[in-house]
Length: 279
Image 1 (tube, one colour):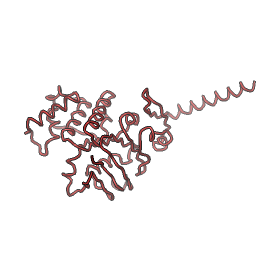
Image 2 (image 1 turned 180 degrees about the vertical axis):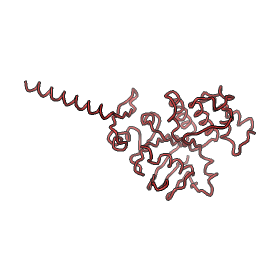
Image 3 (image 1 turned 30 degrees about the vertical axis):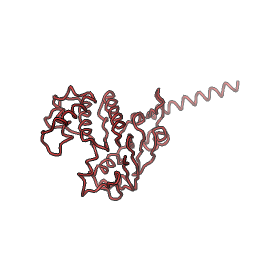
Image 4 (image 1 turned 30 degrees about the horizontal axis):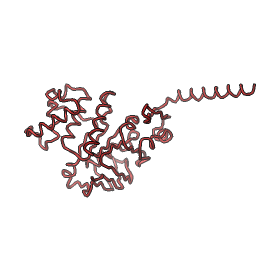
């Protein structure tokens, strides 16, 4: 199966350079989480892979095919893309929204096989009972699951998810990411997602890519990359790393006043021990 390769990518957004000479490789069957503070080019990187914005330099390859704006439609046939802040203003049912993933033109003439495939996808993610509900009447989490079914109906080989869980409650965050994990493994997708929650990234991503100052600050497993010193420097806040019951990293920002209180308590404890040892 083919890998996705970014070679020496340079991306400008206005006068701001969001990527300078970035090179990355993405393999099938894995989830890659792109992390970093606001404004570090996470969404721009996804848009460049999708061909929505043009790179000033560099190349993107999938197997033997290279991203070309002259053949953008053919390039995108391999990609399922969920952009940030998807707005659904149309008066459509949930099933119709899912079926749009299979249509190049806005019409609702589909074969029975496509209809059955759409309903099976909805059943797999637990929203088949919402098929005939107005999409506007659904919760944010239910709409995201419908959009996820929409991109899967395209049968992509590459899945690009831009902050898919940022507006969801904990239940729907876990539900959507569990489905992303399952589909990535079963379909051997290359899944690249932008996340802000570092602890969720640690749970679901095989590898994380930490962006800052237009470059890759670190890339590797969550255990290797999510280090307090590096995160504190990049995010400009004190950070501590805990571990959950399965041993996965849990990243928690620490209030500076709280940190100062801890340091004061530790100092007092040390002074007390010293005074006791002198007695």
